[in-house]
Amino acid sequence: MADNADDARRTLLRQLAQLRGRINPDALNHLLTKMNGWEPYDRESAGEAVRRFLATRTDGGKFQDRLRQELKSKKSDGN
Image (cartoon, rainbow, N blue to C red; front, side):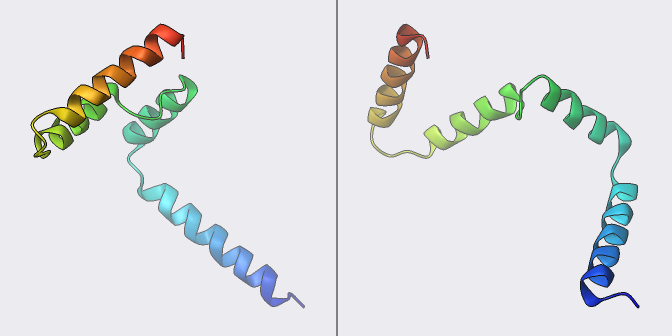
């Protein structure tokens, strides 16, 4: 007789299989390609997100200037 933990495990595995079946194969392939290349994000999309965030700032560009300086110091440090 199976215990409750085994039943929960089987239920979870069945649900995971159903979810996998609903994933677009092209999207999954794209994700796996990015993961193998150690790029967990799309650089262009990330840049657009940062630009949109900076556009919402109301500090006259002070945060953007500070961010630029931090990025320059990281590049010069080799990090």
